[in-house]
Length: 69
Image (cartoon, rainbow, N blue to C red; front, side, top):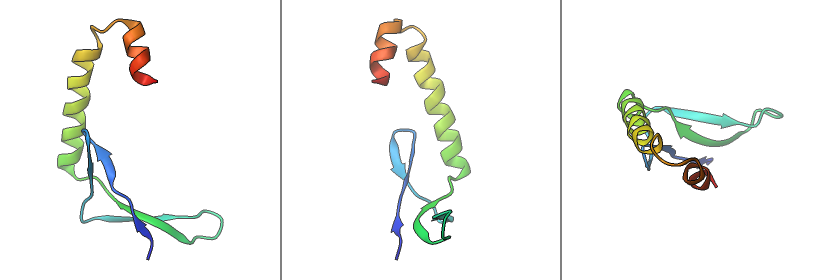
């Protein structure tokens, strides 16, 4: 059985009941599975991005750069 991988959304690992097979493009073997994000996940991700933008927009450049390291 292939390993199940959750996806990261809005600061937490999640999964849904809509599976997605991850295949090796060379031999088409299933190497893992994850799941499609739900509509609620997409809304949560957008909200988290908007919240982060409000914090990051006033942060000095050197602090933003350090956060990405």
